[in-house]
Image (tube, rainbow, N blue to C red; front, side):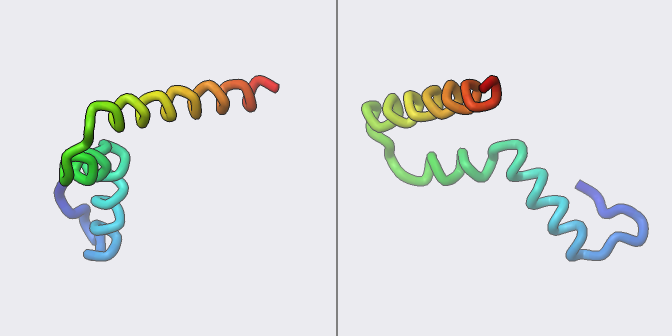
Length: 61
């Protein structure tokens, strides 16, 4: 990422943080920092699927 012309450091840092957040790098780093049991991984995936279904139902209703 490069600084744009007349862009302050604060603005560039804010843009960088948004870029990292959107790409999922931060959550991946947090997730890989500690060992996660396979059962915990499945449970997290199930919760993610359930959340997606509930949001879809809420949007259609």
